[in-house]
Length: 335
Length: 268
Ligand SMILES: Nc1ncnc2c1ncn2[C@@H]1O[C@H](COP(=O)(O)OP(=O)(O)OP(=O)(O)O)[C@@H](O)[C@H]1O
Ligand SMILES: [Mg+2]
Image (cartoon, rainbow over all chains, first blue to last red; front, side, top):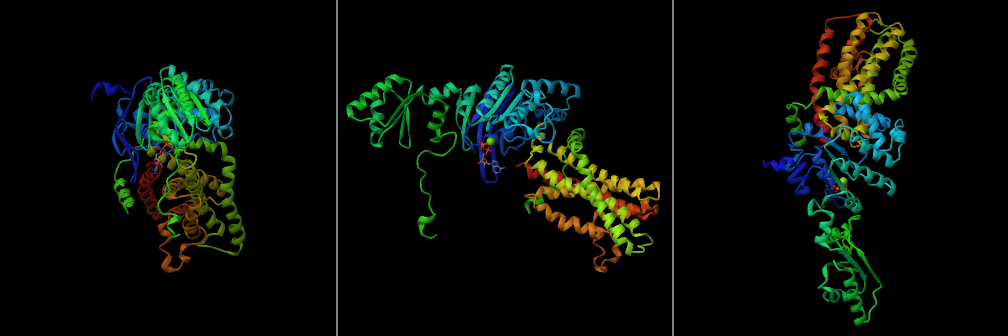
């Protein structure tokens, strides 16, 4: 095997996961380098957790090859897991134990000496702003505190690779920012991270590089900036106008356009030249004596990339266009 | 069918156990137990006490002798075994189900160097330990009532441990296929309660219809009671060895199954 792949913290080749006949992860290839924060961005059911659980050795691979920290997860799971920190999507703290006990007990699974474990717990509680709650029982903590404790617990073995499955889902904006801040600090200290999320802001705040996935496949991969630049450009002009004008507008603006997208009764024009585009469309409206019911120029973001690639928004994964009527059902009259 | 086949195939494979890590899982459960042991022990202890009062002192007044024993002498030693059986069984059904289910404790542990086999084995050790503790506490009660006749009775710890181990295994097997908490009702109604009633705890199995007398011999409780009662009363005989061998063999045969079945339930 090439030395290069050995040096990757994660190296996945044709990674596939099936549940029965259903394919949740469909032959994906990617790798993560040391010190990098790599994001998996995708809607509910995209396969983020399925990928993450194969990496942390919980879920067996259906097919493919997966090297974590240079070793094969299928044969060296114990050794690999000793160097991982894992924050699962669902909280799995010990509810009856105190905050500190949670850390101390977890340390025993890594065979960490009690004195060391005690010292590290104190440091972690401090880092995660939980020192005041050290002796509270977990059941009494708020959701945000539990999440912080779960992240802190994953640091007890000073992991080489931190895997975070939706670390901030369900947190309020303030709690979310605290978590982001801590994760950034860890990143600065050189911890490699794999982060799954369906918040585009989280992805753009934390990830050096990310992969957009949908229905078990990779749609695109790159730095947040690259993805935006490649797929949608810098600006988005949103217009609400009668659909009959769509094609004419697209033709009129085409020299400036990177791409465009219709969602419901909104037309979004993407371009690197925002002002020029606004001027051009103003002329078009004047020429045709029409007034759009809504018009807004804004910077693009990852959600636009996602939208462009899938025709879906990230948060709901519901297609914006009207769902086609399914066959069967009441209309057949056999109800 | 396919699952049974794969179960049989897996029976012959070696489990991936690191004993030290299993003991850490055991300690985790023990630590939680230490928080609640007073309330816990009280309740589990109360039940056999109630039986002892109701049957031993209430009903026992009307029974002059069973096999040459007063009814209290007949019943009390057997309740040591049943007390252990209930403690282990509750722990390895309801409580284990919570740990591997909504609490996701197993999921939290298995991403560390601890393997799923370590976790389940740690559970089995804990379930066994808990049964033995509850059995021994009831043994103290039996001593208190002046029923213990011989220091040899201390040897009951061996059959008690084997029996608790068997019940850990059997309960975890049920837990691994249980879809929800309600299904434990069936386990207790179909298996545990009949065992409690008909395995020689309350009356000698010779009182059962001839055709059914073989049934208790298939239960771990019967063999355990058959050892503990004479030990407590100081009536040691060679036939105890046979019962001990039965318990040992069944404990060893059933040990591998929950390791496979819990793993199959949790890891997809
Ligand atoms: N144990 C399982 N058995 C059957 N199907 C499963 C199982 N786990 C996941 N799936 C399916 O695999 C697909 C991917 O699930 P996964 O949990 O990886 O998605 P996700 O991207 O993490 O979604 P979310 O954002 O909701 O957490 C889903 O369609 C899900 O229903
Ligand atoms: Mg998920």
